[in-house]
Image (cartoon, rainbow, N blue to C red; front, side, top):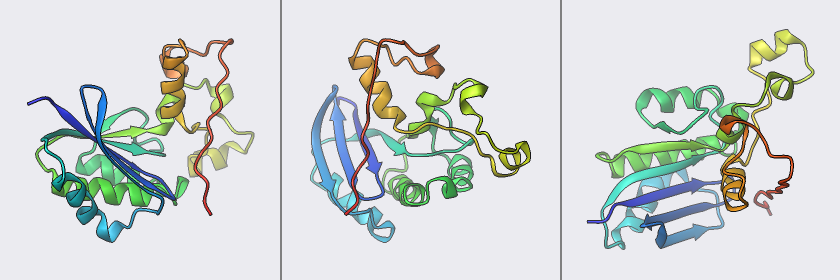
Length: 187
């Protein structure tokens, strides 16, 4: 059977689920409501019950993994718990995303679950760009640094635009590529 990946994108005001096979979306569901953590397992089960395929891996968009997840990582118990410690950095995003990670791990316990942080694209920012002009004690005590956001979109756009995913984690920026990314709108 052809490998099929379930992608889970839990936003602060929406939920997107996709089944991807051979680089093509074969099934999708989009809700314009925040994901309900209490119903996450049922939502995933209902979505998968209508699919004529076996899921071989799950990719979870993670808006912010803090220092715990700065690159794609397997979502085991230790990693999920470490990310929970950074939930205050994106309180509208991280808790519902982790609820869906946990629900998906219960629904699909035998497949790998990978956290894909939006902050990964910017993880290699030089210190001068990542450091806020705040007292060093504050930065150390509260883990304050510039993480960068919407990195998954930036990475996709730079690959499409010929930049090869050119963020700092990939060796630097190209000066001739300008990208704008708009987030969701909350009504």
